Length: 221
Ligand SMILES: [Zn+2]
Image (tube, rainbow, N blue to C red):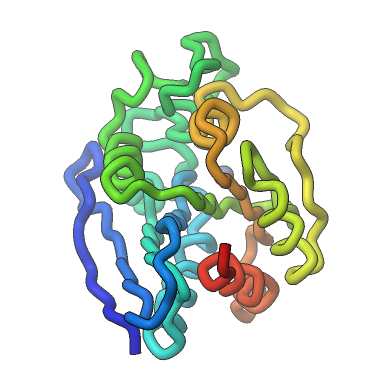
């Protein structure tokens, strides 16, 4: 059994708690930089939240090999409303203080008034800074692909091989102010964006990616 605790790392704009599940590896495991995994930063991708709860359930019996933080739902107001953006209609994955953050945007992709002015973004950022996370896994839906930024290439390729999805270093459209831009491109951390099927028929998304997710929290490095 691993040491598991649940805590609140922040609040959404409407006051919903943003929950994290923290697993400490068994005491015999070699210390490794912490991993942070999060889902549902886009509220219309609830499958990602379900999957990360399933992963957390599994890690109770089969502990991870490194300090692991799971935030199943980074945008609880969006999930409650069934909308991609948060309750202020900001696309949280354009709100990070990356060098390429820009106030200019396509309709529906508001990056906020200033970088990291949204409480949901700040909750994730402060956790990552506080624990010194080096391995960062963002789970999104619709495509079956494993994308990487920064130092995430090797991990993305390993995870892609395990789930049978393609690995890609470029998702094909600009992502100013994105999580990957800040932590991968700007900071050179190990950032992987795992995209799973949108519809979770028979828990298909977790079934397809389970081994890859386990690898991400178990792999010695
Ligand atoms: Zn998304």
